[in-house]
Image (cartoon, rainbow, N blue to C red; front, side, top):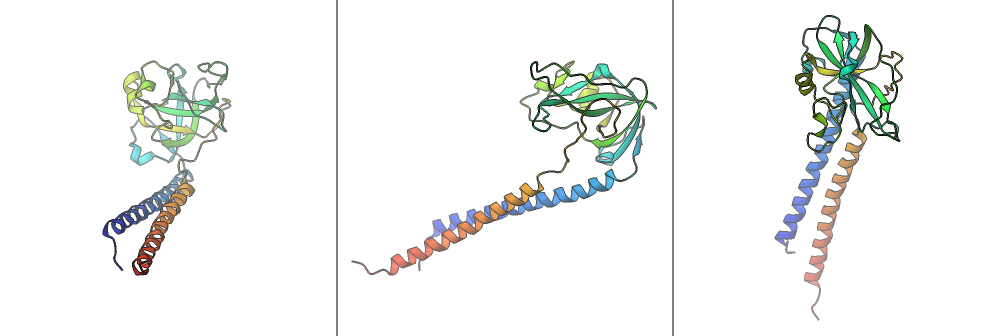
Length: 238
């Protein structure tokens, strides 16, 4: 039986690519599971107190933290296009002036959008004076898809995304290089049912099986085509 080089090569390429993509999805799932284990460990540990001394993001991300200070409502930012239970809304992000000096951004929670007027901000409560909050240190206050840099113009309260370092430069506030995702309740009428930072593991495993299924299908098709070609070669000519 002759093996046609080009079709065989194409099938081998398809198999190699789909198998590799399957392993890549498997590795992504394993990375997420490992990170989830670290996050669970950090979240269940005692809260670290945040003060004036800068803390590197790599040393604090996903850790439970505690901060004491007063909110700065005049520097609030509302992050748009943050749905909750299929309802559009905003994340309320506000600097907290720390008791010991310095500032840290706090993602205080979710607020539903006014459906009749998109830019109207619904009522919520900002505690006056000194407060104590607990939360999880995150690299940012969540990111949404954004075209260009339209959400980072100075003095714009409603934005798509918020970069901590850019906001520090914009406002002149000496911010910690992370955002506290608040989990403690202070009666502010905001929703803090936070999505898990590690999601889609099942989807990764599903994609893995799909890619490997395509590899098996390519092999099966190659064997079928080769067998059919062999039969045609040995078939008696009319």
